Image (tube, rainbow, N blue to C red; front, side, top):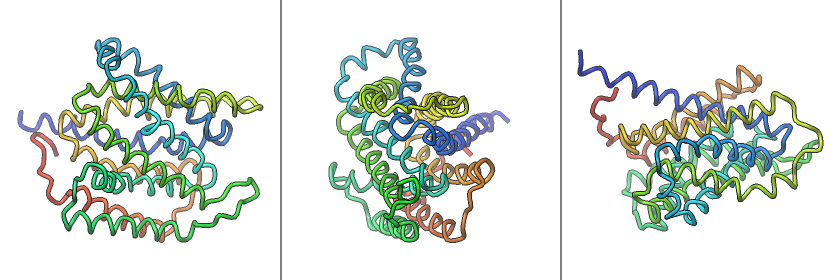
Length: 303
């Protein structure tokens, strides 16, 4: 009986993280509709920073942030500021399900950047996974690659490009962290990166602040995405890395689009086509190969 005790907490935290990150697309969609792209991203990281800073102080990790503040603040724009702004922009013209499926390519970009920058050459199976994953992206984007603006002045093609730019930023930030912030406490990196993103987005957020006051619903959406989908999610993410390892934790990538699609169907009435599901399956298969999931060992005490 005692050997089964650790399984449930790991599973609960893993599924909860997927559910929380899947909801971030819904909340950003609701916020961006009234705040606009850059203010949505700016408010999100400011709220996340305000949530994480007391935790940082309570755990006495401020000295770690102080020692590496330049690199951590810069990482904040790569890992949060630019990607959050890109997704907020994209969600003004494409569905939450589509943006979440494109987000599933983050490990693919991460592997490419590590190959080019850190000389972390992938083996043949991993290269095959990269090719399959990007073929899936091309298939998914093909029907959405219209760069003609709609009635609101936005285009789905640029929205897809914005999502892929965000994924590239995530890939670069992963290699940057490995290269320059190895061994720095994770909470210091998480908190400092949100502070850096807040500083980087402060002026654009104020400059582009909406003239019409946003509704209570929009404010609540940004509070939720800042506290729950950024602050709490970071805590869960790093707890999982400590308990089951980074490779196993990255498999949460497969849960995020599932939750995002379900939330879009229930709360926004979005339509999910068979073509989207087919392309999503191709992307996820490629991601599985690129993550070496077929070689992963089950962590001790995990399900």
